[in-house]
Image (cartoon, rainbow, N blue to C red; front, side, top):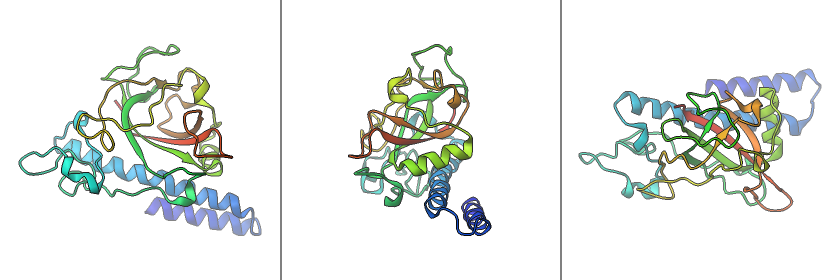
Length: 233
């Protein structure tokens, strides 16, 4: 909340200095701050769970309407990140104002990819297979607007690369789990390492890229994807 307030204050200050400025640009800046804060909050809840003894390999991201499928331990859903008896994180969809075309605003959580040089990595060679011990737990939000995506990367000094035609092509935008295929995660190492070819993302725990597998509907092609590392491994 403090960080978001600071971002809002900064946007207002910059707008005042520029005599009004570009309203669209200021809106994108505020939206990008809002976008980055949510997974940061989820990360805090997960860290508390891990400190309390919960294994990161067994984390589940069931939404409130699917709490019944959370793994129960002594009657408590300790593995569920959003359950009150688990991580207690707030489950929300991204606001429609951040989404382009027909994108849903649903966050995706999986442990199938890794960010190069965040945590430990397999050898930095193109198409290197990731391992179950090195994959990072990542939150993805596919289908955000181009303006928000560019605003995020501008603040980071990054380009907006297309990862759909590079060695990072095998990025999974599906939450996977043996418990609940729609709402939880498993560390399956089915994807690749982001940042091998697009070296600007090497060591970068969050950012935005385009990907051919994400198409929120015309005229937005390809789709813009925000990623945020929740737990580095």
